[in-house]
Image 1 (tube, rainbow, N blue to C red):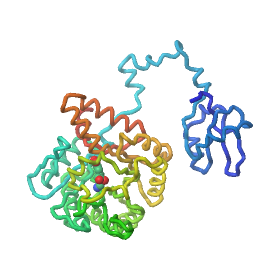
Image 2 (image 1 turned 90 degrees about the vertical axis):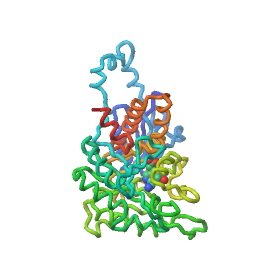
Image 3 (image 1 turned 45 degrees about the vertical axis):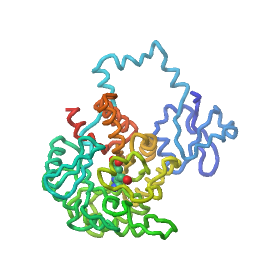
Image 4 (image 1 turned 30 degrees about the horizontal axis):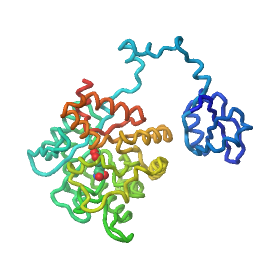
Length: 404
Ligand code: PBG
């Protein structure tokens, strides 16, 4: 990239003006706010607005691009500038550090099943297990004692059916789990994953039929059941709901159902930009939710789609009433996290460091190839640096202990 980039402003009427010639001094926020009010930011190599037509090829329309400026570079020269001065002393490093992990920003995923005294290990996720209600209570108490931000519960029912009816019945497994968790640790935030894949016999995230000419999840039929599911979670005492099924209109349907039942206060954390990902493999063993046919590509996002599609997903969810936005997975999608963070300043952003991302580190660490703690902390710091402030991670308890 040329160091002499400048930003030009093209007003909606089409007239072109220089936005600011010393763009390094334009706070990035100003540019973001400006684009959000409907302006276009154009970036070109030209030094004069008159040259603008010749750089019109650089059409980063509605897209924010890193801004460089020569003046900034000329200020910083060796030997006047030595960046190692900020690194030589551990206390200086600590002083200038910006990314700090905080247990109160971590959410621990937990898998709840029926029975008692059962801790059924998940072989692909060492250290994690499906827990019966009694052991779940001990686990949430521990999460509370460690100062975690919350837990997110996934239910594994005994019986699955075509509609996933266990997910919306008053005595379903997740409803039992929520009641138990709230009784064991009343102050701990209990979030529920709102989806059908663990509850349906076909393993898809909603009602399946062939209305479109191929077996697929029926979007609008699923919305009706999502409304029932979410109300039953609220009635069981959930503090927040987290819909993960990627149905169009799901946030609106859920917000409407909660409001109609008197749960206007209950926040929704939307899995807004959730990609169809092979990184969910171990989770599907954990939650017994592998699709029995096909895959989830007709509803979860295509990882090769334009990054801007994530923005459209987030915009829609916010318009429908989402309170917290999530990007998932995290590590292979740091660009998406950064994009969403920059486009929606002020909207709480969560990222889910998913099962495959966890299991890969565990497996390599078991072989002695990498240091689990160091890699986990580095990964979570990277997700935070990209722009996520809330982290869903299977390392939540470990991080709290590591940070001591
Ligand atoms: C759907 C759901 C999934 C995950 C969280 N919620 C699985 C999927 O979409 O197939 C994946 C989490 C992980 O891999 O850690 N209920």
